[in-house]
Amino acid sequence: MIFLPAIAHPLPGLIAGPGTCVPSLKRRIVRGLTGLISLPQVGGWPWFGATDQMDDMMPWGRGMLVTRPGGGGGVDPSEPEPAVTTSRAMSFYHAPVLLAEVIELLQPAPGKLIFDGTLGGGGHSEALLQHGARVVAMDQDPNALRHAEERLKAYAPQFCALRGNFRNFPQIVEETGVSGFDGMLVDIGVSSHQLDEASRGFSFSKDAPLDMRMDTDAPVTADDLINTAEEAELARIFFEYGEEPAGRRIARAIVKARASRRIDTTLKLAEVVAAAAPKRGKRHPATLVFQALRIAVNDELAALHDFLAAAPRWLKPGGRLAVIAFHSLEDRIVKQTLQHLCAPFLDRPEWPEPRPNPDCLLKPVTRKAVKATPLEIELNPRARSAVLRVAERLPG
Image (tube, rainbow, N blue to C red):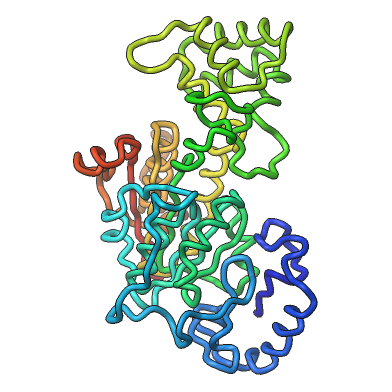
């Protein structure tokens, strides 16, 4: 299957948008495809390993054609690594957590195809690419995609980025012709850049519009929830997604406050929460409320469920699935789901004996959760809550 993300495409979730491809560019693509269609395809994609008259003009990122640095194939591990701008100097910064552990457990290498479902600033993808693997990446944040593409453009022959939520990866990736991966990675939660960019509204460290959308085109913002949801719904969100013990009292205070003025900024909400639930310990009283709202706005837990349900069948035999979670709600879902997918037999009290588990597709690689080292936490305090779990697809 030939994938043309810059031309009319049936899936609006792909990164290519209106105006991405001008007529002259379309003509160049069509002319190049005349000789490309009959060539062998590696990994199911024509630009993975194919060599022809288009060899130095390969699609990457947003489906645009760019000149491949130096021509030829992918990055040779024996050659000097391409110059890469340091991540802190870039406008979209994200420190990839548990990076050494991810590389050790996913085992990227030349010839392997790996899916990065949460591209973010591109840190994990960059390390996978540096080890010679090819990477198909996704992110729902257009800002993340733009900056990651710039960061990783030296790896264009090995790299493709698509726009979308990782929960929808089967529908989006299937259109590319890829049918399986040697490794899959998702890093759940909000990126460092999203937290630090005040205008996104993820943090109350600065006053900003109450947004919290990872996908900036999503229809519902935190402002919408705070100012329109019923008191009982707000209490449920705070309790289920934030495990906030004062959720009912906070919900009641929000409904009362919004009757006189709209709560439309991060500091307005933080003030209402702080007045309703005084500070306990070092943590700001609004911390769990903001976490809960972010999860609700982005439907994060349901997205994780959907991804875990689909991912095992996209792994090749021996392929590995790695998930990084940042709080107990996420990690509980990952732990319980992997336990089920790794159990050869199921047993219930009413059954005379255990029965084979039809969902047993994986075996555990990490018996316990992998956590950041003290050194990493010192360098990146946000890594302190990161938890990595890995499982491997069974043969057959």
